[in-house]
Image 1 (spheres, chains in turn brown, purple):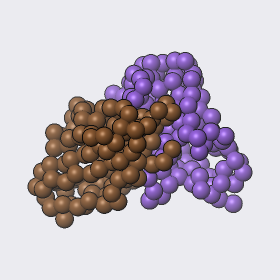
Image 2 (tube, rainbow over the protein chains, first blue to last red; image 1 turned 30 degrees about the vertical axis):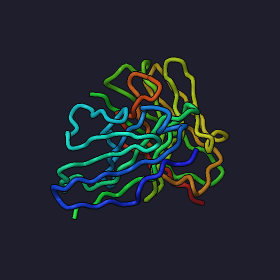
Image 3 (tube, each protein chain N blue to C red; image 1 turned 60 degrees about the vertical axis):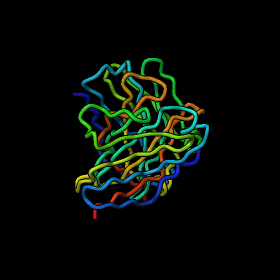
Length: 110
Length: 121
């Protein structure tokens, strides 16, 4: 199972919006609405921020939103803040009853 | 609150095995599925496999199929991940994560704090 494809890095100024893409295949992202996004700060465990394509867990800022079109899912962070600087990973359930993560995206707040 | 606490760091020699533990609290362990994920330094997250706690059914990523065994002990609410035939490339932080309740496509939340496994001669 190949990793889902994400841009290596995305940057933006405080207050701006950025979007991170996550491209897979019809056997994972395109085949199920089981795409999740995780935020990971250096030296910390990942934290769930979006599940089932576009749902936010309780306590996660509404500045984070998710969507999907075909084999590509997207995470949008609006009103970018310094604390959003972190690595972001998408994940999808697959047709093999396994999971696959994305290649990861480093978000830099300029 | 839901919490996963993992065992401490390990240093192993190539060719040996390591067993990492993950103790759950704050949720019904028997209704969950436990995932294992690893991350080499500076690298991406990599899914290893999972166990549905109630049934004991497991599924592993093809890459680890021959070398990994995930088990659970319901009496202590603990999941274990054993990786054999270790090589230097297995040096990584290993995380457990819970899917509560166990469900197809379920999300990984919460996560353990991570266990550093170092493979070195």
